[in-house]
Image (cartoon, rainbow, N blue to C red; front, top):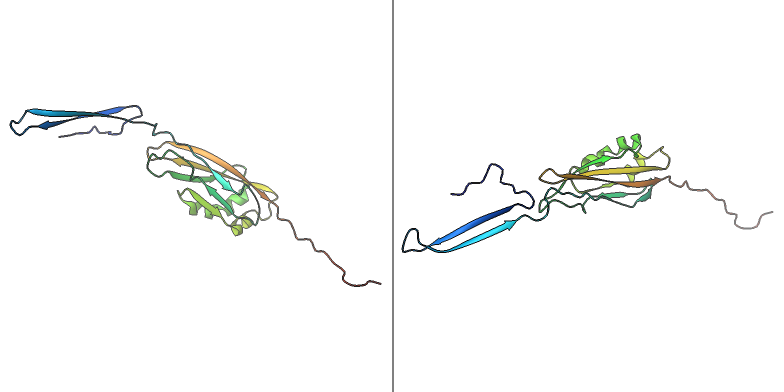
Length: 169
């Protein structure tokens, strides 16, 4: 019978060895052959590297912004979990107005701020910055943080121009 310890997780650089025995049919304890196999754990499973990207990095208030942490690594075959927040450079009014798309992102790797959400969030705010932060966490509890800043430009107001057609006197 095999029994694992109460904590069967191997740490980086640890090894596990097993021995298999093949018994002959002529006697209960006659060993015909044996096999020994050692398996070593490679990369440090506690290392997570958060990577955060925003597209575009500069947009008018009426633009759409996509934020993605999909390039983060360290899940070691399992999905990472993400916790999203706003950085200190994001105006307080914009944080309050953008709470819904942030909540909708959940623990997913990406989310989108629609043109309507961005326009509403930065309404009455001069040129500013939308700073996003993410904490990526793996199944072992290891985590890493990254941030990205998006410049939100003032919308250009349309200029009214009069054009004269024909003769003037």
